[in-house]
Amino acid sequence: MNLPDLNFSSGAPVSRRQMLRQFASGFGMLGLAGLLHETPFSRAFAAETAAADPLSVKPPQFPAKAKRVIFLFMSGGPSHVDLFDPKPKLAEMQGQPLPFAKPKLERTKTGNLLASPWSFARHGQSGTAVSELLPRIAGCVDDLCLIRSMVADNINHNGACLQMNTGEQTFSRPSLGSWLLYGLGSENQNLPGFVVLSPAQPAQGAPLWSSSFLPASYQGTLVNNLKDPIANIGNARFTTAQQRSELDVLKELNALHRATREEDSRLNARIEAFELAFRMQMEAPEAFDIERESPETKKLYGIGEPVTEIFGKQCLMARRLVERGVRMVQVYHTSTSKRSSCQLWDQHGSLREELANNCAATDQPVAALLKDLKARGLLEDTLVIWGGEFGRTPTAEGNNGREHHPFGFSMWMAGGGVKGGIAHGATDDFGWHATQDKVHVHDLHATILHLMGFNHERLTYRYAGRDYRLTDVHGRVVSEILA
View 1 (cartoon, rainbow, N blue to C red):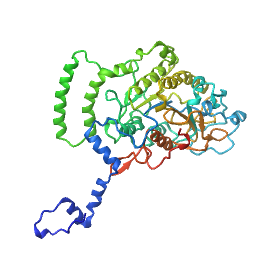
View 2 (view 1 turned 60 degrees about the horizontal axis):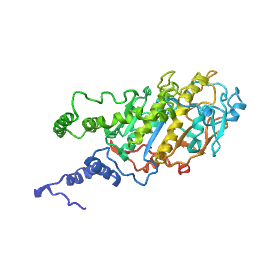
View 3 (view 1 turned 90 degrees about the vertical axis):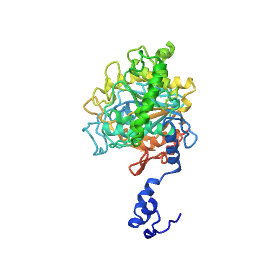
View 4 (view 1 turned 90 degrees about the horizontal axis):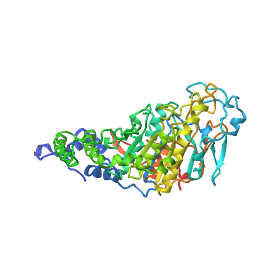
């Protein structure tokens, strides 16, 4: 609409938009245009989140293959050449120098080639090769979409972990789980929509599941005590009716407090947390109580056996949570019966002992989770992801270790709309460089969002004058692995 030129001598009232259009040659309209610039999708989100609970269920942009995510995170960087990427040439040239120049990006100088101490065998109808360290996961190989050509940008734990979880290596950005909550909400308003199960907290801590500049309601909820997952949730002093009455009064006081302040998602999240905590009293104890499971199910996950007890509980809790409507559960492997560490899969030394221990602790629970989800009809629309922040060098650190390696490594996904029984991409003859069908971390994130019903370029949030997204300005959907 054309606005008339201003005539201040007429004494007619002047609107703010007229002033912005005329003063300083209309420069003020540039700022206004930026503030008002929204896509139809972001306008719909703004209207919906303003009018309803931010965790209420929202439709995806297009029909989704997956409804929920379980991310099994092997914190520290599992060795691809010892687990999922067999290299006969590595065995053939054991102890010899790598026959090409190493990248300049190297944390610690490594020595000659180190062959895997373990053998590989082909499994399933697909004939995919898997290490002898993972016999039970190998039995599920026809359900796995194995990606052997992953690449990342950072050689250090901090940056690589942040990139795998948030898409960004250094600055604070919303985590994958927070983006999923922002886009889809949660199917169960009585439980957190994004749960992190980690007995020993990863070194990077809360930034791995932070909502960053997204509203605080979308941040992950950390559970680090498997015996008492939600501490102090009960209140023996008051009845449910008494607590409800107190909350109603508190809600009125909070509304008065909020009315005198500008919109603040952190304040809103804290106010909403009281209501969520009350609702969780009813449902959370049951959701986390694995003692309600049958002895057969607990045995399947390895619960009751010292080696598999800890991760078995984590995996069983993950299944119980997703079947109750939790949108994303991230399961960090940071504790075994032998030791706890923020980076268990970080074998700079003791490769033969420690990698075997980690595999023994996780192999049975992970296979049990896949079988259990499949038996309950949940695997079809639950995306299970397994991996760490990077892989390990094919060359030796000392005589029994491997260094960090982001140049080519393995991850796998199962269920949720990916092809089962395939191995996508490849590294070179030594497992150093991804050489075929590279999948960058941004590509992985774009594919996850696609499976959840989103175009990764259109799931955006405007902050500080620009639109942000999980994949920044990168990423492509790996269509070759889609079922």
